[in-house]
Image 1 (spheres, one colour):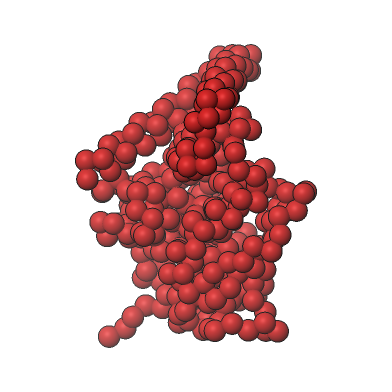
Image 2 (cartoon, helix red, strand yellow):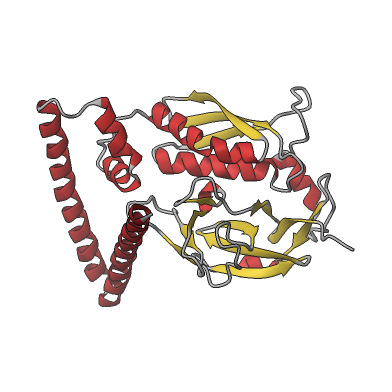
Length: 317
C-alpha cells in the first residue's frame, strides 16, 4: 500500500514538473518572440544532452551484457522511461510490437463493453488498420467509445503513426449484439437542428450547445437530460463521460486536465478533485492507478456546429 502511494506521489511530482515547464515557456512569451525562442532552444538543448546520456547508459548496459529482454521489458513498462526512449528514438520495440502491446492494454476495457479489437495491418507508411469486434452489450457507449479507447492507446504508444483506420462490423459480417457504426450514429443526429432521437439501447442524443464554446484544456459538468455528464476539450477534440469517479463515486465537478510529463502533445489526464485518482481522457477514461477502473464514456458527435451527447434514458418510477 505504501509502495502504491509512493508511486502516485511520484507521478504527481512528475506531472507538476511538466506543468511548470509549460508554464515557464508560456511566461517567456511575455518577453517577446525572441525570448520564447531562446527558452524553447534551452529546453531542446537540455533534452538533447540528457537524451545522449540516456543512449550512453543503454550502450554501457548492453556492452556489459546486462540489457536483456526482462530488463528492456521493465524499462518500457514505465510510462516516463518509455516516453523518453520514444522522444530520443531509443525505444527497443518496433512500431508493430508497440501497437500490439497498446491493444493488449485496452482489451480488458473493451471486454467490459463486450468488445474486442483485431490488428489487420501496420503499413510502412505509418497506417494502422484495425477491426472492432463484439458489441456494446446494452451500453450506450457504442463503437464510437471503443474506437476512442483504441486510438488513444495507439497514439500514446506509437506517436509516429500517421493514420488509424478502424473498421466496424457490417451487416455482411454480423456479430452478437448490435454495434452502432459511426455513419449510423451521425445519421441519428439528423440535420443542423440535431433533433434528439432514441436509439436501440434506450439512450438518446441530446444537443448540448454550451460544449461548442468549451475552452481547450477545460472541463465542465452539466445535467444532460437529467443525467450528470462531465465534458472536456483537448485541442479540437471533445470528450464526454458520466459525472462519477470510478474510485470514490463522487462528482467530478472541479476536475482538472493536465498533460503528464513525457506525454505526447494532446495527451491529457483528468484528476478527480475528491480522491485525486487520474484518468486518461484519450483512452476512454482508463484509470492510471487501477487498470480495472475506468470512467463511463459517452458518445459525443459534432454535426454542423451542434454538439450532441448520447445519454442513457432517464429511469422513471
